[in-house]
Length: 600
Image 1: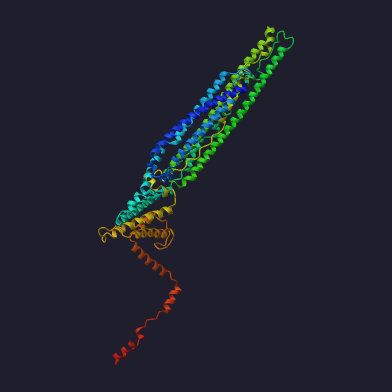
Image 2 (image 1 turned 180 degrees about the vertical axis):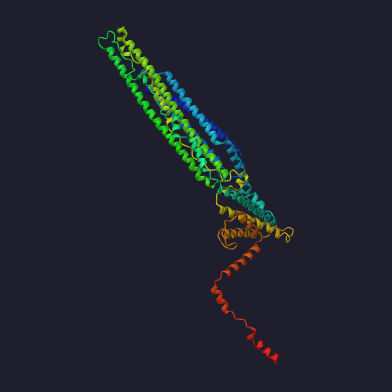
C-alpha cells in the first residue's frame, strides 16, 4: 500500500515536471523561431550568398569567440540543467515519509511532498533561466550580429557571386581595375604608407610595454601577505564553525535519568504490567542508541568536511600565489595590479563559497541536535506518563489497553531524519572551485593604443617588435624619400612614384641590414656589443631607407677599409718584397755625370 502511494506521488510529480519542461520548451522554441525568421527575412544583410555569410560568421567567431560559443552553449546547458534538476527532485519523493503507520496514509504529507517538489522544480527552473540569460549576454550577441553585418557587406564589396554561387570578382575589385594606372599606383603607394605608419606606431607602443614589464617592481611578498591575512589561522577557522562542538541532546534519556518504577504496579498478579514497562524502557533505549549512532556518524562526517574545507582553502591560497607568480613576469605594473585584483577576487569568492557551505552544514547540525533534544524531552515525558498510568489503581482498564500502551512519538524522528539527511547531503560535499582567471590581454589597460598593438604585445618578444618597427620605419622612409625625389621630375598625369617595387625593396633591405648589423653582431658600425636602444634602431633604419644610396656607398667603403686593416702581416711583407725599389740620385748615371761636367 505504501509503495503504491509513493508511486502515485512520483507519477504526479513527474507529470508536473513534464508540464514545466514543455512550457519552457515552447517558450524557447517560439523565441528562437522568431529570431530565426527575422534573420532569415533579412539574410542578405549578412552577405549576398551563403558562402559569404558562412565566411563572415567564421570571421566573427575569430573576433568574438565568447559570443558565438554562448549562443550555442547556453541553450544546451539550460536544457541539460533543467532535466537534471527535475530528475533529482523526483527521486526525493521516494524517500519522503508519506505514512504514519502500516495502514494509515498521511495525506497531508503527500500534499506537502508534491508541493515541495513542485516548488523546488520551479525554483530550479527560475535559477537556470537567470543563468541562461546571464550566459547569453545580449549586448555581446548584438555586437556580434552588427559585426557580422559589417563583414558581410565588406565581402559583398570585394566578391560577387558567379552563376554557380562561387566567389568571383566583386564590385570593389572591378572598380579598382577600371581606374587609370596612375591612380592605381597612387592607391598602392598610400597603402604602403598606411601599413608602414601602422607598423611603426605599433612598435613604438610595444617598446614601452616591454620595458615596463622588465622593470616592474616585485612586491610579491606584500601581495602574498594580503592573501594570507584573508585566510587566517586554522584555529580561528575552527572556532568560527563550531570549534570543538559539544552537545548532548540525549542527555535527558540517559539510563540514570530515565523514569524508574519505584513503587509496585497495582494488583499486578501476573506481572504483565511490569513486563510491559520493561519492554517499553528497553525499546526507548534501543531507539535512543540508534539515534546516537546516527548523530555520531553525522558529526564525524561534519568534522571531516570541515577539515577538508580548510585543506581546500590552503590549496586555493597556494594556487592563487603560484598562478600570479607564474603569469606576472611578462606584465607591466598596471597589468600586474589588475591581474592581482582578479586573482584576489577569485580567491575571496571561493573562500566565501566554502564558508557558506560550512555555515549551512553547521546550522544543519545544530538544527538536528535541537530536534533530537526536543524529541528526547518529549519521549521522557511520555515515558513518565506511561509509568504513571501503569501504576494506577484501575487495573482492569489497563489490562484491556495494555497492547496499545506505548511511548508517544518514539519513532516520530525517523522519517524526518531520513528526509533531512537525503535533502541536505549536498551540504557536506565541497563545491568544485572555479578555474583561475586568465591574465589580462597585453595592453588592455592602454586604451586605443593597446588595441593597435595588441597582436604585437602578445608575442612578448623584443626581437620581433624590433624587426616589425624597423620594417615599418624602413617602408615609411623609402616611401617619403621616393615622393620627395621624384617631385621635381614628375610631369602632370604621372604617379607620385613610378617604381613602387624599389620603395618596398629599399625599405625591407634597410630593416634587414640594420637588424642583422645590431642583433647579429656584425661589427660594421661599432666594435662593442651594447644593449641596443630600440628608438636608435628605428631612427637608423629610417635614415638608411631615406639615404639608401649614400648608406650603401659608405658601407662598401667601410667594409673595404675593415677588410684591408685585417690583412695578415706576412702577406703584407711578401707584397712589399715583390715591389721594385726606387732608384736613388747617386745610383743614376745622370747624377754621376753632372758634377763632373761642372768641374770641367
